[in-house]
Length: 98
Figure 1 (cartoon, rainbow, N blue to C red):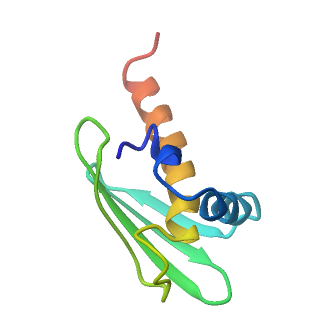
Figure 2: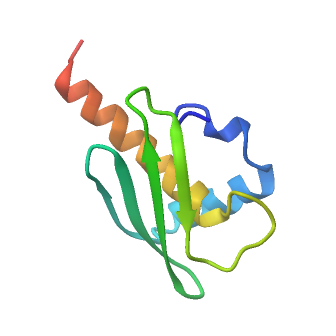
Figure 3: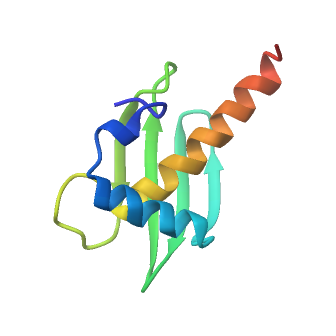
């Protein structure tokens, strides 16, 4: 799964909830160290999401410390993947403007 097409692999209900979290500014921090995103997401509780990316933006691994057991991707990960993609695009553009 690539950060550019993650929406194709996540259940629509989870995506919708993730978008709601993103649009409600529930992501309180988002950092990228060149290989891994780490974010804090506020909801009923605060959760930490981490995602490792390859050089070609494949999501190699992702983790959230929430108790969700309904599948591999929770709404917190979906919320983080969206701004992660935006920040990645911005960084790529600044390095290689068209």
